[in-house]
Length: 452
Ligand SMILES: *Cc1c(COP(=O)(O)O)cnc(C)c1O
Image 1: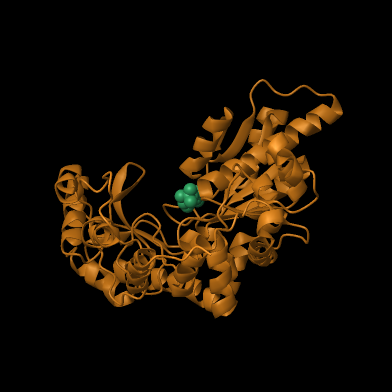
Image 2: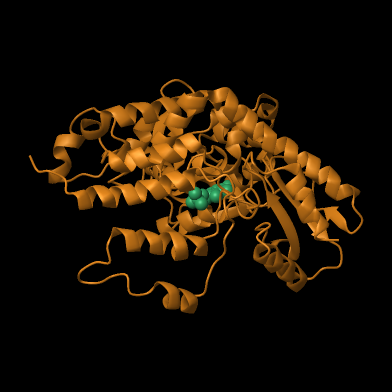
C-alpha cells in the first residue's frame, strides 16, 4: 500500500482547518474587492516550478485573496440575490469534493443520484407536478433555462416531423418583457427569436397578451416562459392564466423560478403561484433561496423522456451508459460531466427537515414587509412597489445615481452592508434582496438611518 506522507496529511489539514474556521465564523467579514494592481502587488508569484507549499498558499488565500472577495453570506449582503447556505450544506459540499463522485451516470453515481432525486421529487410534489416528473441539478438558472428551452424546441421539432409539417423559418420563445436576461441569452445561444410581451402595470404577465402573441406567431412559438418571482422586484406572473393558454394551444410552458419559486414552500404564498402545476418544465436555484452553496439549479421536467430525447449525447465511448435504461442525469441538460451538486441541499434538508426551510423562507417574506412599512413611514424615502416576495425596492427622494453610488461605496467601506443601486424604468433605485435568516430588522433599520 502506498502510505500517505506527513506532508500530504498536512496539506489536507491546512485546508480543512481553514474551511472549518470559515464555515463556523460567527461574524462573517463583509470584505471588498481590490484592484488588479493591488492584487498584483499583494498576491503575485504563487505559481512557481517548485511550488510555494501548502502553508504559504493557504495563507495567501486566507490573508489576501479571500478578503478581496465580498462575502455573499454576510447578513448585510443585500444586492443581486444573496447567498445563505446552511452550515450543514456548506460542510457537506466538502464531502462532495472529497468523495470524487461522478454525478452524470447511474452506473457510476447511483447513491448520490438517488439522494438528489429524493430532493427533486420532493420539490416536484411541492410545485404540484405529477408523479413521473423528474430532472437534474445543473450549474445555475441560466443553464437550467437554456436546457429547458432546448428540450421544448426539440419536442416541437419532433411534433412537426411526426405530422409531416415543415419547421418555421425562425423559432420563437414568448416571455414577459420583465423576464430574466438569461432567457435572451438562451435564445441567442439557440439562435431563436424572443417575443417580449408587455406585462400589466404591476409588472405581471397575463394569459391574454400571451394568447395574442400565439395568434400572431402561430406554430413558430415553441415555448412560453413565465417568471415565478422576477429578480429585480420578486413579481410573480399570473401563471394560471398563462398556463390556461399554453394548455389549450399545446405549447410548452416553462417556469423560471430561479429566485422566487422557493416561496411555494410557504403555504400562504401558494395561491400566488397557481398554474405552476401545469408547467412542462420549471427551475429553482438552491443557491438562491434554498440555502445551498453555489452553484446549483434544480431543473424539473413534467416528462423527463422529452428531455432525454433532446439532450442525450451519443458517442461510441458513451454507449455502455446510454444503451441502458438507467436514470442518467447528464442526459437531462446541457452538460456531460457533472458534480453531484444537489447533495449539499439533500444533506441539509435531511438534517434540518422541511419545516425549517418553510420557516426560513417565511422569515424573509415577513422581514421584507416589515421593512417596507418602515420605509413608507420615513420622510424622504418611498417604496417603488409593495414587495410580493423578499425584494424591497425604494428610492431616496432627490438623489441621483451618483448620490446612490457614493452612499453605496461608503456603506461597503464601513463594512456595514453591500447594497448597490439598481434601476427601474430608467430611474436609479435602491433594492434590498433578503435571503439570509441572519439579516435582521435592526440591521436594515441601521442601513436606512444612513440615508437620512
Ligand atoms: C438568478 C436568476 C436566473 C439566472 O440564474 P443563475 O443561477 O444566476 O444562472 C434566471 N432567472 C431568474 C428569475 C433569476 O433570478
